[in-house]
Length: 173
Image 1 (cartoon, rainbow, N blue to C red):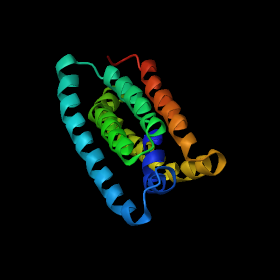
Image 2 (image 1 turned 90 degrees about the vertical axis):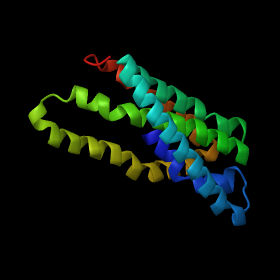
Image 3 (image 1 turned 120 degrees about the vertical axis):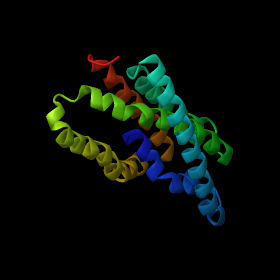
């Protein structure tokens, strides 16, 4: 979540300062990229949800989503163009959709007590919202300290680190 939202919260500025999209074209380009990302997320969420149910494996898809997200973050580094950003948004959208398809399934399987599920889900909601709140501040610090190009490998590390934590969950396959 954190790696995803750091880049997403600064997408408009990435287009202007890193990709060098003309200011007059930035809003329409951003809108198009948002649609591309959303469609990719939906496709992945539907497909991966069915696959996870069929195979009875959740952790594999959580880990896979983090690896795919990390790999997607190298696309803008290798191709800092609008086309590179389109490909990035497709692949990153697929990764995020994959994560969203299995995230709640994993969470509900590891809740300690059924009678505390409401409280626990409230905490999970905060855990999901916190990266969205913190991301612009983190992005700002990265860009100020090291520039836009540093955002991508740092977020790749965050994505891999977060996804790798699922290995610690022993009660779910």
